[in-house]
Length: 91
Image 1 (cartoon, rainbow, N blue to C red):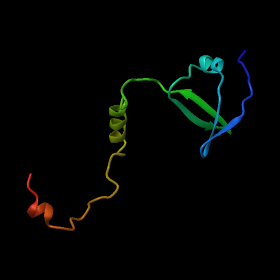
Image 2: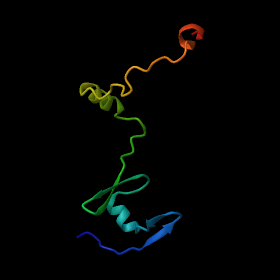
Image 3: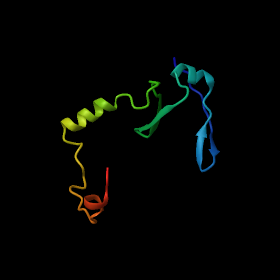
Image 4: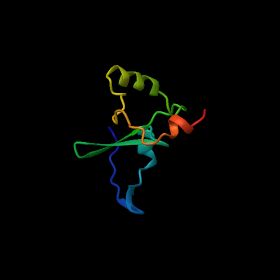
């Protein structure tokens, strides 16, 4: 059976926090960075996997975006308001 404890919200600057007992942190496998989400008026906290690579998985996400046509520019063609790029810029 899972442990059930009560805790009080404490003020932390303009936010609030809660002290989580060590026993619950260990049971949930929480430590370091966590992900918070509201589901049905409940706050769900889960561990964030430590990949050691901050951008891990981005390549697959970008491929999926391209497959769905979600990687197009939203601005369309941007008019060139000056002649700098055409005449003055040197590579």
